[in-house]
Every structure is written in C-alpha cells, then in structure tokens.
Amino acid sequence: MNTQIVKINRDDFSDAELLRAAELIHRGGLVAFPTETVYGLGADATSADAAVKIYAAKGRPQDNPLIVHVAEAEDFFKYCVIENEELFYKLCLRFMPGPLTLIYPKKDIIPKSVTGGLDTVAVRFPAHPIARRLIALSGVPIAAPSANLSGKPSPTRAEHVIEDLSGRVDMIIDGGECDVGLESTVVAVKGDSLTILRPGGVTYEDLKEVTDRVEIDENILKKTEMTQAPASPGMKYRHYSPATPLFAVKGSEERILTLFRRELKEGGAVICCDEDKAHLVGGHILSLGSSADLKGQAKRLFDLLRTIDTLGANAAFTRLPPREGIGLASLNRLLRACGFSVLDADMLVVGVCGQSGSGKSAICSRAAHKKGFVHIDCDEVYRQIIERGGECLARLTEAFGREILDAHGRLDRKAVSKIVFADSEKRQLLNKITHAYILKEVKERIKDARLEENIAVIIEAPLLFESGFDRLCDLNVAIVADHSEKTRRIIKRDGITETAALGRLRSQLSDLEIIARCDCVLENNGGVMSISKLADKLTSFISSRKQ
Ligand code: TXA
Ligand code: MG
Image (tube, rainbow, N blue to C red):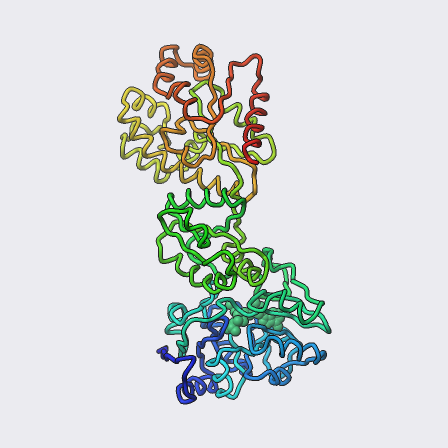
C-alpha cells in the first residue's frame, strides 16, 4: 500500500488540507493522525470492517478494544449509555477536551469488533486541533488505537508512525510532537464511582478533585498473566518495549548510580534524570529531564524508549519515576516496557578470593545456606560452559589442538592443565578465552539475583583480580590459611605430589597480595573457627556493609 504523508501545521491549517484524510476515513480507509496524547491510527468506528483493518495494520490481538474518538462532548450520548449524567458533565467541564477516556455500556451503533467483543465502549474527546477537525469533517466517530506496531512504544512524533506503519496505512498526518506524550487516562464509570484502568495525562489527583470515589485498578502496577481477564484487556499484553533488553532499577540513590556507572562501562545504556548526569560519565546516557518535572519526563519517555534501539547498547537500565501525578502513568508504562524486570541496586556483589586450599568453596557454599545469599562458583560456571560444548570449547580446541579433547570430544581438563601449567603464555591465552564466557554467565546470574531481591551475591573466583571480575564487585573478601595447611589440603583433595601442590600455590597471587586488595580477611586454619563460623562471619560482614 502506498502511504501518503501530509504535513499540517497544528496552529494554522484549513479544512481543505484535511478533506482528503476525512474522505479516506469516511470510505473505510486508515489514517494516522496526531492527538495531544500520542498519534492515533484512525478508522470509521461505526464500521466493523474498518476495525478489522486497524487490527491487521498494527498486528494487534483482536480482543484488545479500541477507543472511539468524538468531536464534541455531546457525542458521547450517541455511542454510549450514560446513567449518571451529573458526574459525566462534571468530568466534561473539568477535563474535556483532553486526555481522558471514559468507559460506558455501548450502544448498538458501535460494532463489537471495535470493542473487542465487550458490551462497553471507551470514548474520548481529544483536544488536539487536527484530531478534532478531522473527526468533525469525517462525519463519523473515529476508532483509534495508538499508531504503533503492537508491542512497540506508542508514537509521539510522525517519524515514529512512519517507522512502524509506512506501507500499512493510507495516510499519515504529520502534525508535530504530541504534548502529553503518554496515552489518555482510561476510566471505567460505574454509577458514581470511577476506576482508573490505565493512568495517563489526567491524574488520580485530578480526578479526586471532581469526586471522592476514585479507585486505581490493582493491575496497573502488576504483571497480569495471559490467562487472567483484566478489567482492561490492554493490560495483559507486553507493551512499549524496545528490542534492547530493558531493566528498571530500584534502590538507594547512591547504589542506583553505582549500578548505572558499572553498566555504562559494560556497554549498557542508561535512562536517568538531569540530576544523575552530573554523576555519570561516558557511554549512552539518556535523560528524561529534571527529576522534578514529571510532565516533561512523561513527554519524552516513549521517544527515549525508541532511541535506545538506535544506540547499539547491549542492555538498557532505567530509573523508575515516583507514583505521584503523571509519574504513575510513566511508572506503569516503564514497568510494562521492561516486562516487570526490576533490578535491586541495593544487592551487594561480593568477590571472594583465596589461594588453592584456603577453603573458600566450603565457606562460600555454607554462607549461601543463609536466605538472601547466592553463591556463584566461577570454577563451576567454567565447567558448565565447557560441558555445553559450543563456542567456548571450539575456540579452546582451535587454540590448543585436539589433544585437549577426550574420546567423546569433551574437554579433558587434566590435559589442559598439563599444557598450560608449565607455560605462562598459554595459561594467559586459556584465561583470555574462558574468562569472557564466564564473565557473561556471571553477569546474567547477578542480574537474576537482583531480580529476586537477594541480599548479596558471593562470587567465588580463584582469579578474582587477574580476571578483572573484581570490577563487578562492591566488596572483596580474602580467605587465607597457613602455607603448610593449604599444601596438605591440596595434596589430600587432588591427589597430587607435594612439589605439584607447591608449584600451584607459587603460580597464584600470594596471601599478602590478596589481602592488600580486599576489604575483609578471614583466616581458615581449621580448628578454632569452624567452616560454619567463618561462613557466619562472612554473611555478617556483608550485612553490616549493606546498611
Ligand atoms: O491517548 C490515547 O488514548 C490514544 C490516542 C490515540 O487517543 N489511544 C490509545 O489507544 O492509547 P489504545 O488502543 O492503544 O489503548 C486503548 C486502551 C487499551 O488498554 C484497552 O484495553 C482499553 O483502552 N479499552 C478500550 N476499550 C475498553 C473497554 N471497553 N473496556 C476496558 N478497557 C478498554
Ligand atoms: Mg497502544
């Protein structure tokens, strides 16, 4: 389909400029047009076929009902049954035309294909001059969802619409940037009470000025399962999502900034406020505006969600706005955009390091028995990556030859040890190849632990500093033991000679070198302090640093 793009000046236009668009709507065509909230994809709301066309162009599930747009407040009475007229007129006087959508029982003139099979209809009287005039000239009410492909952020500029719908609709009217930037507030009216099904430009506080009886549907800030039937079908679909994985971040100010800094260094993008920017450097930093300007933030939100995908960032991290005023609407959109993936920035990442035989595995795994503590053993991660075969194993075979594989084509760790033990260059090559894969996996596990709001992740890494994994950590803990004790434990555990055990210890950072880089030292010579006591010491040290 050839999509006509027409530029119209919202402050100065004539009916002649809108006639073609009005005619298209009247004859069952699809026209995207600006409203004060977001761009809408319009079609004749009295035509069942037109609605079907909208669903097809957007790739939208057919049970998600459309909003019917009217040119005058009085037109509500043509399409829905309004019992409490007094309340309706109060809402009209205060908020119309504007970003408020009201749901009432529908009249027959609105086909069920428009309302997703429901007996109610959502109606809105928009304030944008182009939208109002277009509806009036069309001579029919206009059904219009946001003019984006289903799942993508709603369009706040014509370029966004062109990106999504060019070739799928008859016409796109470019009327500049939308004022509100988020979709209208959807309110179900029953008797004398109002329930907000989707927060938007008209806020809870605004509605409270008109009536005391305002409720907020509990699903607004909750994940709705696909099997549930929410009051507003739109709630159950993934929405507003960029293609780049997006994570929201919560926690104390300082810890959020720490997380942002770390992720910027790792190639992530950050959505923050102007005030944060002074504390961040480099990378992809996108600001929603001043933290006090909730309206400005709402207006920029969708545009930034689209911008993320143009940066080439591996992931994006965003602050969450407060629940007050229009902040509630931004919060609702952001939670859906990130699929409710909220990272806890307050969770600590703790690196634990120590020479072979220091007993770090025993202490760390014991510490992870405590609720809220997660143990990541880098050796175990390495083993799992190798077992999976795949890319890492292929690169190792390429570097060291097929002699590192056993008869089944799996990695023979002993053969690898033999090759790299005597040759420090080869050892470095091995580490360079494997650490990248381990790092990626460790980062994923840290993210999962943050999603579950744990107290801390304990990364047990024999080469914590050499591998650079310490950059992921907020704290580092050293586990030390007497040289003779470590030698004895290695011989017993691995069945190797004393010479081999001593050689292994010599190749590692010494206890003194490790201590110099750590925030806490635990001494494990057995005897007085048992493993479980040391594990308790580790967890209490971490907990004390959390406050
Ligand atoms: O600001 C807006 O409302 C924009 C502009 C274009 O006007 N339109 C818009 O439409 O956002 P759409 O289709 O993207 O969102 C309509 C929302 C959906 O969440 C839908 O589930 C809900 O309104 N809705 C529509 N009719 C409903 C009904 N009868 N009962 C409950 N929810 C309804
Ligand atoms: Mg939408």
